[in-house]
Length: 314
Length: 314
Image (cartoon, rainbow over all chains, first blue to last red; front, side, top):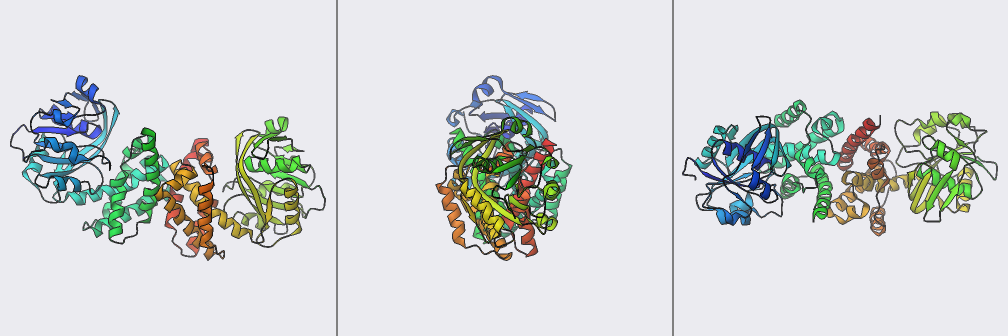
């Protein structure tokens, strides 16, 4: 639990999400450092530029490091905003900076992303977070925040803690709407309804959200996918009312046409987050003998695309 | 029924399939004319060049016409090799040249493609045909025949006729292996097993047959799609043994990696044959209350891609 009013924050992964929220905190005066890999040189020398619908800004992290062992001292918060990919061993990556008082924060998509962290750091506060934001990395050190931006944080697996409350408070102070959920896993399943349907369909059809909803067949498919996720969520103890499914779809209808982050990943030859979006839900379904034909079909198609992306970039 | 040893043959649609088989017949000395639309000028002035694994050749049809009413006399065979698309009204297109003795031949993919012809020309011999061939149109007037080439012909809906036997005979004489099936609709369902799975998956993943079968998830999906088609076929009276499904997959494993014709259509912005490959099977499934979740999922995705192709080319 952080003890300082100016906690030391280390952002792991300075893509769109980490770059944006780290920037909001840094601009508000908080002590934000960042671990960069591909963008290290440019961020070290020039900082990060953010084009944002909330107002453009630029910032320089206190420390910009390429290797975790370069970090000076102990962070109060380690905020992981890396994509949730199976080959990234987050516990190994962050271990060198984790002390008993470090709160570990995961702002990532998908489900079952917390397990490995909890097993490796059972005594640390583990905060699970969801970003509701349209943001993308335009090029190294440059981020474009198009719309939305709310964060939901909660102690994993349930409840709350001083570390959650304090982080939410400084984020709100920094201009980021941040809500606390005492049942963050349920929130995760609710967000999965959207990602499992719109992200996947958008990749396979190369279409934006408007096109998907205007075609009767894909609009129907969106709903069927959401129903499968809803069923799996219920089996794992997280009941979600059908009204949430309809709300997701109606809210999406009102959005500007949106090309999902998974579609952008696919188009730019970056590995997609298939396992945490679909694979883990399919495993849970199997454990409960639930048939999830649609998401298994989509999963099959997307793993082939992902394999080819990985082969091309190998 | 043709009465001449040198029957008049009119090919409708001079794409890859029509151009190839028409060419084989023409080179063997048969009286072959062709209705061309987009390739009219080049075919009229230069004929058709065929690069073929059986030996390259060039030919000039007896008549090259742009409008069906230009055709002189009555054809003994009208061979339709157009893509099977909902907006093409084949009965209206061919009506001006159909006499009581004309045999109408459909060499097209999919199922339920014969219904409109039979309703409009109930007294003509209707021959349903399937081409097992890897062939593509490289550019106007130029065709590339990569592999295979067998034709299966049969009287619709069942049985045989002199017109079928005679056409098979002249094709065999021309160097095309042509078999006669007394149950051609069953053959159509068997071919659909392949098209409904490999064509569709190839479009959605942009992958060739080898990639599809090397990925365990898509290989499994191929089999599940084939099982759905098998169930619908059985409900409509055409039992297909599961060994045929395995044979399709094993034969495809042995093939050179193949990019399906539907994938080529998609990549070149041409409308795909979604309705006759999936849509009609789904309608039959619905009539028999059979659940076909996988093909309905694929159908949804592909109709969205097709809509966008059609909008782009409108």
